[in-house]
Image (cartoon, helix red, strand yellow):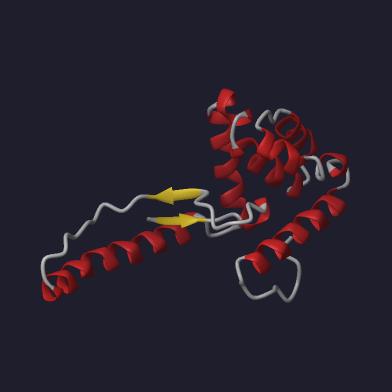
Length: 153
């Protein structure tokens, strides 16, 4: 499986925020057979990773995807991470009405708690971005990724 992980949601673990399941599978019979068989898995993983990179080649592309996904299923939006993700990208883009709609519409306790620190900042795009940059820095540290030289947003 290949996946994109949105560092700005601060999941605290490597979540699969948009995943592409693998179509390849190889049973183990012998070392040689398995070595040859895994080449298809490697090629599929490489191809899928490149497709994900191309699909999400900018923050705008990610934001458009995240917001459209949340809007595509309004009932599920509040019951999942989708509304939280859409609220964050909307806030980062300065779309305060949309950010407020998404973040105030959350009903899942796991994301309601996470949104609480963002709700008072919705009208202040600079403060909102600063808070999300803090979340990104924490997430990078938890995942043992190199610190950014400058803020992400």
